[in-house]
Length: 255
Ligand SMILES: Nc1ncnc2c1ncn2[C@@H]1O[C@H](COP(=O)(O)OP(=O)(O)OP(=O)(O)O)[C@@H](O)[C@H]1O
Image 1 (cartoon, rainbow, N blue to C red):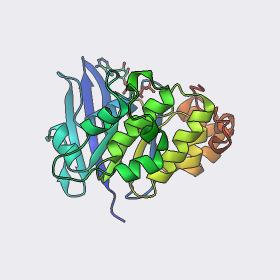
Image 2 (cartoon, protein in one colour):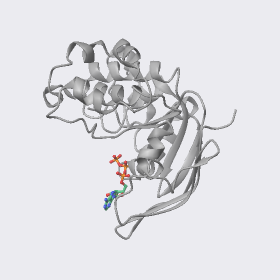
Image 3 (cartoon, rainbow, N blue to C red):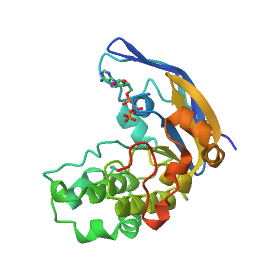
């Protein structure tokens, strides 16, 4: 099967720092590919480069293709319209607007927004339509951020640390949602919680020192505790609590 995304020799320099130094990997057309690595290694930088959101003054080189389409020279709004969905790390919901208004802002002209699908996945967003997004819990804001992207058709979703800072029970809910989402659209996921990785990921790409240090079967990686420890600074055994059981505490940032 052809990959949905091809990243070749991606280099990013920001403020004089050579953060990514020739990163190459592919994302399978189905399921979840997880992007791993120690703190500050460049995972967010990678997602932001793919979606055209490298900070001003940053220098991006290399090739990123989604199918036949070359992404790097295109503005973000075009990429999004072309089916590249992005859920950023900080969720970026509009705090002063209601849930319904946040969703409405994501509607794309000329397409029919999939409210049925979004409300089926997140009944709470329907119930809380008139609530200001800023007064939602972290988990609810995350659901809104994901729901907003799912209103439109996507060929690929980039999701950056969706479980960061969430209580274990909410981590489980987010993992369940992503599992369902990944049944219909491939996902490139940055995730530090190894219980969530174990539950969701089929493929893994591990960054270290600005390059890809390891790529392959995610479940295989998690079985190799010594390797996981050397690449991520945490043994996979430490992430054994199941995200399905509400005990997701694995990962170097256990929240
Ligand atoms: N705008 C910026 N200006 C200066 N340095 C930056 C900027 N953005 C990122 N960096 C640096 O680039 C490196 C990679 O950051 P990035 O956020 O991509 O890492 P990460 O792997 O996502 O980290 P974490 O796991 O902590 O979220 C870090 O050292 C960070 O300080």
